[in-house]
Length: 342
Image 1 (cartoon, rainbow, N blue to C red):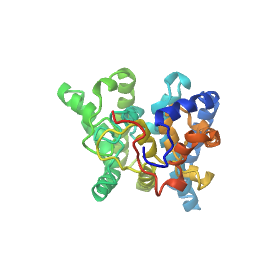
Image 2 (cartoon, helix red, strand yellow; image 1 turned 60 degrees about the vertical axis):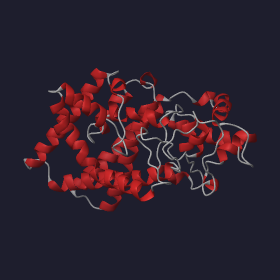
Image 3 (cartoon, one colour; image 1 turned 180 degrees about the horizontal axis):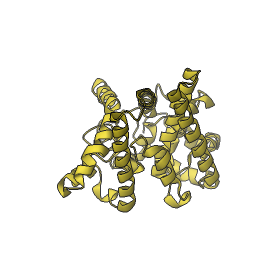
Image 4 (spheres, rainbow, N blue to C red; image 1 turned 180 degrees about the vertical axis):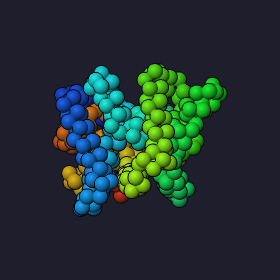
């Protein structure tokens, strides 16, 4: 233990937090449905205004980008939320966002590996790049992936996915290599995990493929105005740009490719609590409490602000350890040996 560090591990902190947030763990169905409905209305309504050429286009563009970003970020919530917590919500989100973006929720099942004790920070963490050790290479990978995302998603569902239905060998490759949201090509998806909800995933995949074909046909046949397609693509790329920045700020990325202990994972994550509530626009659904999310990944997004305040008010070594993830400490806090490596 480094001198001056609180004598408590990440797991001890998590255990200390459980009684503190016992009343915050329930997913409030009304909050989810209202948020989804309003966000979808803002997103697609603003895109429609852009497409038909109404005035005040900068305002509509801003609303469309922030609306689509918040709407898309629900995929992260779905990765942690039990299906029965909010019945029907997974399908509803896929219909209003996942399928139109060719980003069905099963592509984010891989997010579980980002929280795995043995995979976080390794090549089998789909959301981690070693910026502290290989900055320019990691940045190049992230930028290239961002630029290619729309094309790769279209290829996955319009071409490669349908072809894989005809070949078991290709299907295995598609499930392992092309069925996960990942920042790098070294990641290998868990095929058996993908097959747990096979029927539902097949439904989502089929709908995504139909949308990809339909979108291609409408563009090729001139049914969809090119101006609408251009606005749609611009909004998507602006959303991807914001997400790129959020990704860079979510962690310190100081891992060296080896598995990190739970405490090291916590201190490699960041909490942005100093900028004010406006940051919710760019780190929606509790993303600005990213260290708290790694501490308590099952906590619903609408409870994270209150949980953050309670944790800071707890006092003692628990609070001191958590404060190391917050803005004031980001310049000096580094992953530390609070626990033995697994």
